[in-house]
Length: 124
Image 1: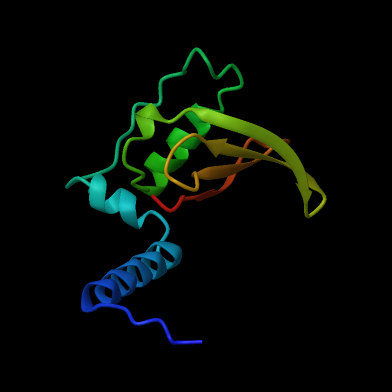
Image 2: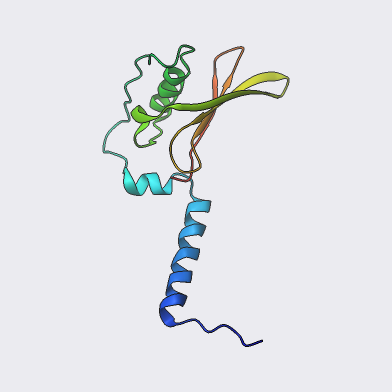
């Protein structure tokens, strides 16, 4: 079997795809930073209740992002994609996936206390 010969352009394309894949995999939110760069000054999202969020999860997450100064780009356009419960350390945790950002951002809330445990950014 003859080895496959790639043109110089093909090698450059493969290298570019490899580097981009590595950077996105290693730096969640990188594409969001490129497409929606963090503004100067403090992060202040509007945390008003939303009609399609009767449990108020979006308000809690919004307040958490403001308190911790986490820039997630276009948070105001985020919608809850799905919610499920799991158990961690003998407590019920609500995991919220948002319909955004490539692999999707998610947040975890302690069901008993309402405390936001973490916020993970998607790939973009």
